[in-house]
Image 1 (cartoon, rainbow, N blue to C red):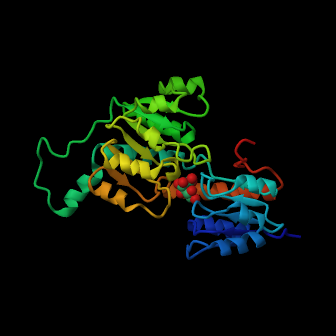
Image 2 (cartoon, protein in one colour):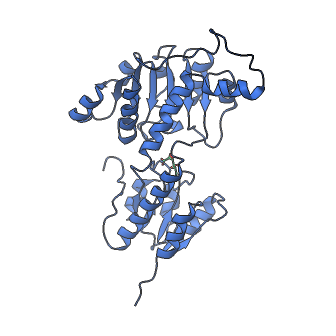
Image 3 (cartoon, protein in one colour):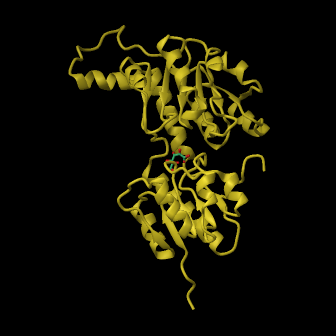
Length: 331
Ligand code: 8YV
């Protein structure tokens, strides 16, 4: 007798190929309208479903998890970061949490380099000039940016994405420095000719470019605080493709406005989708390049994320441990 398909609630619209496969394999409840679900709708979903497939835009907190039905066995996040999910609360209730690592590493690293270059070489300002119809022609002293070749890059968070950024940055002639909870393997350090800084403060004071590539956890919330931002040289630029919460936005805005920092390339914000209007002013002035959380937004990446989600669901349903299981911090 065929097994009953698990009820899988998917909170956002996914690529069609992924949705079709989910329909074939599961009793998949899709969100074809792509209308973000309210907390009440999420609650109804977790009460009924066997599996929930949320994204970064859904808040799966302890309150919600506490009210989940007996059937809910898996929260299969469509995304790498799991700061939207209370993983510890899920574990307490015997619910497995998975994510989609690896498949968005290269795309996010590309976007990091893109922002680094865009800020240093004033790409957005150049586009705006052409767009305004006010370009008067070439001049030797006009629109000068800063070279990235030969500069020092300080990477905060040397996980998969940080390492992928380092590989690219090395090819662009940057020297690689990093701060991480743990020092990476010697072979990786050698390959990247990377310098490890146990002290984030000491690294910050010496870098030309800072790239934020660590996850948002209680330990990294406002890691770049007002005090730490003040350690940076005024020529430094910051790039963040990780999570807005890692930087104290208020302090960052002040540092940029007061010319204590040269610029910022931001793909993420503290209260997405809200973007503080001051960032728009800074972008107009050429001090910031701001993007709407596009770091992993490639067709290939989204399809592979879908594959990971499906593999995680299938593996759990077959009674095995899913490959991308996420454990609570410190467990
Ligand atoms: C994804 C991300 O697009 O995976 C992550 O952690 O930040 C994004 O790039 C998003 O999470 C999809 O849920």
